[in-house]
Image (spheres, rainbow, N blue to C red):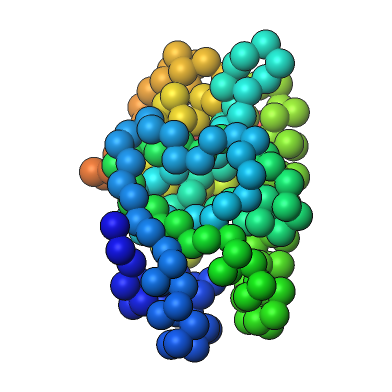
Length: 227
């Protein structure tokens, strides 16, 4: 499917580019829709595109040596992926799948890679994004070191919680299975924990979102009882 320059302009990474550059990229880019649980980007593939998510939600995953699925991070609309392979020329380090019906734009590496290094605004955005990703992964490693399942799940839910001092929520909350592979627990354990949190009023379902009692969630994540 063809891509309009205005669509590319909506992505924060590309919005600083001149109109003629966006038009050139759009002429080379393509768009594709993916069904739920479909593979969007296989692991170990050569760097061919910078990928941008228009709508839906994706998840980057990998597998342990014994074949267990491990969730790495989520990709939301407006975000991009496959940038690591684009930067260093090495194979794609993880598998990306769709968690819902999703639309992805693919911009050829040969067109976009020179811009990543020659456009200051893009280079800065990329560096900030990589720094944020590293910080999240460091926190995630710390969370995986928690032995108490309730504490581990609550700490991970804190990472997903958005909002200010008022009502805080997890927007389009992941499924129990999607959370389970992020925190290296079974889906059944996550389900039981959610039942406890909802019974206590720490989590409240609001459509696709979860409203979070952030003070009590933080207490549980720190090992408290939140009574």
